[in-house]
Length: 371
Image (cartoon, rainbow, N blue to C red; front, top):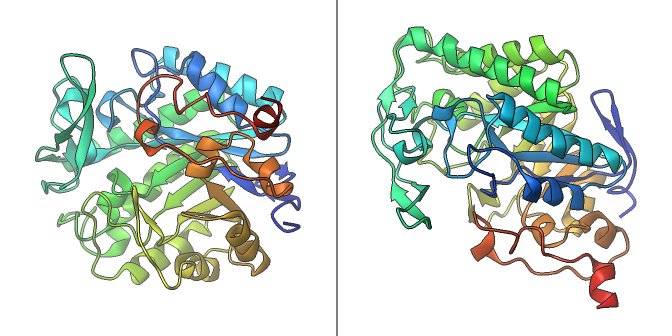
């Protein structure tokens, strides 16, 4: 594991190892989509000196929320809740980036105050939303047909990303990551399977990428160089996504990202599409492609083991590797990798929503040994 545990940097930040906490939807906020005590404990448990954490996808407006009890960053209450998380993580010597997003057509009126979701085009996603039943339980619900955005509304959403970037900076985060993956609003604009517009935001890839880059410009204007990142899922189909020329689309985006002094680009590998595992003979195809196109730091994510993470870094396919499920059940994952310790299995049934069970009650290896 000598490569995985060598030092590196993202932007102006020096890191002591390359094991990153992936952004994970866990649906554990307090009322009002505010981070509370549970979230403070969860992130603190996974913070290590010189490590990097990326938060849950965090909504930039009420209409941006995809899942019940997912966090927001558009009110002072959100700012204060996240500040507690950031302060606790910094106290352990770690860095933390806030992932910000807009769900677009993946939202549901039950989570948005009854407002119809929006999208670049009025096309239905075939996925499901997580909502709360009348009895308080969490259930799946079919998504509804979104409303196509009017062109005059798009700058208003860009400004929501700018405003959320301001709040994130005030909360003390080390940077922000734009979630342009997994079938949410940025990707809905970017891919021609979901963007049928004929105006300045549709048609050729330069137009379809306009919303992403206008939002990126807005966020960079707040944070400056080396403190903004972008997440992409070039092989993703979650959210009923498709593109007629994915290599051309993502080559354009990746090369244009070189115009920005980004902290990193974060790529989801073909082994994972949304929440679904698949088989892929060439599991590193997209990081290899994007490595040719994008010249800055690269984080790879999606079904990695410690050995596969060490391999991709040794081969130069990525600079860091993000872990999701293994970090859920192993809060001390970097230590377990470093010392070749057994890993605890995760319980998928507790991933989304609930209390401390399956969230903050996984023990460290030392606690297991001493029990």
